[in-house]
Length: 171
Image (cartoon, rainbow, N blue to C red; front, side, top):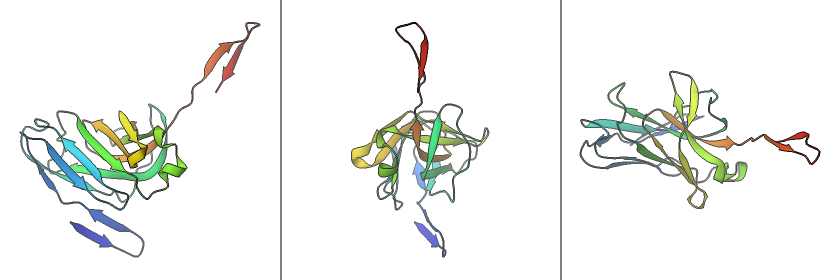
Protein backbone atom coordinates (compact mmCIF):
# COMPACT_ATOMS: atom_id res chain seq x y z
CA UNK A 1 0.00 0.00 0.00
CA UNK A 2 1.15 3.50 -0.73
CA UNK A 3 -0.44 6.73 0.33
CA UNK A 4 0.61 10.25 -0.51
CA UNK A 5 -1.10 13.48 0.34
CA UNK A 6 -0.84 17.16 -0.37
CA UNK A 7 -2.78 20.04 1.07
CA UNK A 8 -5.56 19.45 -1.48
CA UNK A 9 -5.68 15.79 -2.51
CA UNK A 10 -5.05 12.39 -1.00
CA UNK A 11 -4.32 9.47 -3.33
CA UNK A 12 -4.46 5.90 -2.13
CA UNK A 13 -2.91 3.21 -4.30
CA UNK A 14 -3.64 -0.45 -3.92
CA UNK A 15 -0.93 -3.04 -3.99
CA UNK A 16 -0.42 -4.65 -7.34
CA UNK A 17 -1.80 -8.18 -7.39
CA UNK A 18 -0.43 -11.03 -9.44
CA UNK A 19 -3.20 -12.50 -11.61
CA UNK A 20 -3.11 -16.24 -12.24
CA UNK A 21 -3.96 -17.72 -15.63
CA UNK A 22 -5.33 -20.92 -14.03
CA UNK A 23 -7.37 -19.81 -10.97
CA UNK A 24 -9.94 -17.15 -10.10
CA UNK A 25 -8.19 -14.06 -8.78
CA UNK A 26 -9.87 -11.47 -6.56
CA UNK A 27 -8.19 -8.10 -6.14
CA UNK A 28 -9.48 -5.88 -3.30
CA UNK A 29 -8.96 -2.14 -3.00
CA UNK A 30 -10.22 -0.09 -0.05
CA UNK A 31 -10.49 3.63 -0.81
CA UNK A 32 -12.50 5.98 1.43
CA UNK A 33 -15.78 5.39 -0.48
CA UNK A 34 -15.72 1.67 0.38
CA UNK A 35 -14.26 -1.45 -1.18
CA UNK A 36 -13.71 -2.00 -4.87
CA UNK A 37 -13.40 -5.63 -5.89
CA UNK A 38 -12.21 -7.04 -9.22
CA UNK A 39 -12.81 -10.76 -9.85
CA UNK A 40 -10.87 -12.28 -12.73
CA UNK A 41 -11.84 -15.77 -13.92
CA UNK A 42 -9.29 -18.44 -14.84
CA UNK A 43 -8.16 -18.16 -18.43
CA UNK A 44 -8.79 -14.41 -18.68
CA UNK A 45 -5.06 -14.10 -19.42
CA UNK A 46 -2.79 -16.64 -21.08
CA UNK A 47 0.05 -15.85 -18.67
CA UNK A 48 0.30 -14.24 -15.23
CA UNK A 49 -0.01 -10.44 -15.27
CA UNK A 50 0.16 -7.77 -12.60
CA UNK A 51 -2.94 -5.65 -12.04
CA UNK A 52 -3.06 -2.33 -10.21
CA UNK A 53 -6.19 -0.65 -8.85
CA UNK A 54 -6.02 3.04 -7.95
CA UNK A 55 -8.11 6.14 -7.46
CA UNK A 56 -7.83 8.28 -10.58
CA UNK A 57 -6.47 11.80 -10.10
CA UNK A 58 -9.55 12.91 -12.05
CA UNK A 59 -12.10 11.60 -14.49
CA UNK A 60 -11.92 12.42 -18.20
CA UNK A 61 -14.68 14.52 -19.69
CA UNK A 62 -16.68 12.93 -22.45
CA UNK A 63 -20.19 11.87 -23.22
CA UNK A 64 -21.57 8.50 -24.16
CA UNK A 65 -22.90 7.50 -27.57
CA UNK A 66 -25.10 4.88 -25.90
CA UNK A 67 -26.87 6.86 -23.18
CA UNK A 68 -27.10 10.10 -21.26
CA UNK A 69 -25.00 9.58 -18.15
CA UNK A 70 -24.48 11.85 -15.14
CA UNK A 71 -21.05 11.99 -13.51
CA UNK A 72 -20.55 10.91 -9.89
CA UNK A 73 -16.82 11.30 -9.30
CA UNK A 74 -16.69 7.83 -7.70
CA UNK A 75 -14.61 5.20 -9.45
CA UNK A 76 -11.32 3.41 -9.94
CA UNK A 77 -8.58 3.01 -12.49
CA UNK A 78 -7.37 -0.48 -13.44
CA UNK A 79 -4.05 -1.00 -15.21
CA UNK A 80 -1.94 -3.99 -16.18
CA UNK A 81 1.84 -4.30 -16.32
CA UNK A 82 1.62 -5.23 -20.02
CA UNK A 83 0.35 -2.29 -22.11
CA UNK A 84 -2.24 -3.28 -24.69
CA UNK A 85 -3.09 -6.56 -22.94
CA UNK A 86 -6.77 -7.03 -22.06
CA UNK A 87 -8.74 -9.89 -20.46
CA UNK A 88 -10.03 -12.58 -22.81
CA UNK A 89 -13.05 -13.28 -20.59
CA UNK A 90 -15.51 -11.09 -18.75
CA UNK A 91 -14.18 -9.67 -15.48
CA UNK A 92 -16.48 -8.57 -12.63
CA UNK A 93 -15.96 -5.16 -11.05
CA UNK A 94 -17.76 -3.96 -7.94
CA UNK A 95 -17.41 -0.33 -6.78
CA UNK A 96 -18.83 0.97 -3.50
CA UNK A 97 -20.13 4.45 -2.83
CA UNK A 98 -20.36 4.25 0.98
CA UNK A 99 -20.07 7.66 2.62
CA UNK A 100 -20.71 9.58 -0.62
CA UNK A 101 -23.79 11.59 -1.53
CA UNK A 102 -24.66 9.26 -4.44
CA UNK A 103 -27.58 7.58 -2.66
CA UNK A 104 -29.17 10.95 -1.91
CA UNK A 105 -28.15 12.75 -5.11
CA UNK A 106 -29.11 10.01 -7.58
CA UNK A 107 -31.69 7.23 -7.62
CA UNK A 108 -29.42 4.31 -6.62
CA UNK A 109 -31.42 1.92 -8.82
CA UNK A 110 -30.30 3.90 -11.91
CA UNK A 111 -26.57 3.67 -11.18
CA UNK A 112 -24.27 1.94 -13.66
CA UNK A 113 -20.54 1.54 -14.03
CA UNK A 114 -19.13 3.13 -17.17
CA UNK A 115 -15.69 2.50 -18.69
CA UNK A 116 -13.76 5.29 -20.32
CA UNK A 117 -12.77 4.45 -23.89
CA UNK A 118 -9.49 6.35 -24.42
CA UNK A 119 -9.44 5.76 -28.17
CA UNK A 120 -12.88 7.31 -28.76
CA UNK A 121 -12.92 9.74 -25.81
CA UNK A 122 -16.30 8.48 -24.56
CA UNK A 123 -17.80 6.70 -21.55
CA UNK A 124 -19.23 3.24 -22.29
CA UNK A 125 -21.98 2.07 -19.90
CA UNK A 126 -21.42 -1.55 -18.85
CA UNK A 127 -24.01 -4.22 -18.01
CA UNK A 128 -24.44 -3.29 -14.35
CA UNK A 129 -26.36 -4.33 -11.26
CA UNK A 130 -26.98 -1.66 -8.63
CA UNK A 131 -27.08 -2.87 -5.02
CA UNK A 132 -28.54 0.05 -3.03
CA UNK A 133 -28.76 -1.99 0.20
CA UNK A 134 -24.95 -2.35 0.21
CA UNK A 135 -24.15 0.97 -1.54
CA UNK A 136 -22.36 -0.58 -4.50
CA UNK A 137 -22.67 -1.25 -8.21
CA UNK A 138 -21.36 -4.37 -9.96
CA UNK A 139 -20.58 -4.69 -13.68
CA UNK A 140 -18.76 -6.91 -16.14
CA UNK A 141 -16.12 -5.79 -18.63
CA UNK A 142 -13.56 -7.20 -21.04
CA UNK A 143 -11.38 -4.09 -21.04
CA UNK A 144 -9.41 -2.36 -18.26
CA UNK A 145 -9.36 1.42 -18.07
CA UNK A 146 -10.86 4.09 -15.83
CA UNK A 147 -14.28 3.21 -14.39
CA UNK A 148 -16.83 5.52 -12.82
CA UNK A 149 -20.24 5.04 -11.26
CA UNK A 150 -22.70 7.09 -13.30
CA UNK A 151 -26.42 7.67 -13.28
CA UNK A 152 -28.26 6.37 -16.33
CA UNK A 153 -30.63 9.18 -17.30
CA UNK A 154 -33.64 7.51 -18.80
CA UNK A 155 -35.64 9.58 -21.24
CA UNK A 156 -38.29 7.78 -23.19
CA UNK A 157 -40.45 9.49 -25.77
CA UNK A 158 -43.77 7.78 -26.39
CA UNK A 159 -46.18 8.57 -29.17
CA UNK A 160 -49.62 7.71 -27.88
CA UNK A 161 -52.62 8.27 -30.15
CA UNK A 162 -55.45 10.21 -28.52
CA UNK A 163 -59.08 9.27 -28.87
CA UNK A 164 -59.38 11.63 -31.85
CA UNK A 165 -56.39 9.97 -33.53
CA UNK A 166 -53.88 12.80 -33.08
CA UNK A 167 -50.54 11.73 -31.64
CA UNK A 168 -49.29 13.16 -28.36
CA UNK A 169 -45.67 13.11 -27.27
CA UNK A 170 -44.97 12.10 -23.66
CA UNK A 171 -41.50 12.48 -22.11
